[in-house]
Length: 536
Image (cartoon, rainbow, N blue to C red; front, side, top):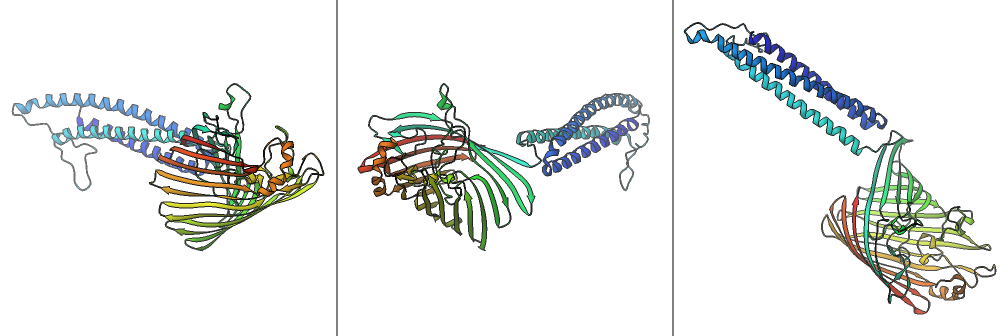
């Protein structure tokens, strides 16, 4: 058996087989990855085909290993034959002359016909084959990791469009001193603090969100989002307080052109866009009914942006909304219209805002208006309205001052009047009893200090202050309503937020509420809250 006639030919064919198989597999995988990124419905088929190619690569590797073992055996046999042929040389004979190998020519000059170069070339070629096999194994591992990544990051959708899942798993440990309307995220105080207090924990402020990125229509990018939590009440079962009912927060659709957007669905109150920073109160915004106007209400709005310069712009928004007045539902299953919806017209709102870059952050001033026509029982009509202002001012590179102010009437449906849109001057069950919209004034402010990219401190205060004279005039209704009339609700909070990773947060917060009733009766409550959350 001749060394040059057997091994180099096998090695050449094996090398070509590995090269073309690897090149074809990688090219096919690259093509499938491109297709998968542009067409969601082809991803599953691409992954299956990719997995089939991986299996073929593994089979080819197994064959190459077997062939490599055969080469090693043949190499050992050739070395034995070579040693046998070197016997005459040791006794002074002439060495045999080997024929040049078929593949031993390089570009420009013929290779030597000496037996020694051919003998040293064989181990080099075997080593080269092993290197290629090792490279093939690494490529296979890379392909497998890509397939695993596809399975981990892909959110399956019935359509071909991309879907993104997000949310937060949030734990709140809280200790309260005082009587409040709600144990875990209170809004106002309901009684004296003497002899009252509690400790608890909840996960019901955890949130789940979905985003869908749709096609381009009439030059606009379409998208939709949905956000829900578990703060919709409690099931009537053992320890039901730990089994919060799934609740819709927002669900909206958007069409975004270059400078104009159309938004339809249940969304935040665009006329009151800011809220204090707090992870102790996510189920409802912090300072709800204590100076922070808010609502998650169905709406249709249009937004247009004017670019004045590279760092200066103006935003104009306007829309209509479901006309809500803040009452609890009249029926737990069937939907019945409220006083705002009985008016047979929506609520209206507009807002404009100016934004300028200052210290690398947005400096924003906004102004908004709101109107709501309401039809209370016995055809008592009330006009609800509000004027609002909001601001976000960078005071230093890491310090921001923000807040909102409002003046309005009959705005319990958007977080004003301590949830009391109207007051009665007597028995609400009589048609002759006058109904009046409750005037109020309020707002909140917050100072934010970012110590670093991972730690920030926040301090805020807010107040909602209905007109005391109007409340006093309605004191005759207390006997019929069964609850006191509130004339002011104050809130303060201070917290620290630590985010060692973008998906992990820790926070500690202290908050205090003080609620005033008629004739200077006031009650206060304190809460200390420890929070841990993981975002996804």
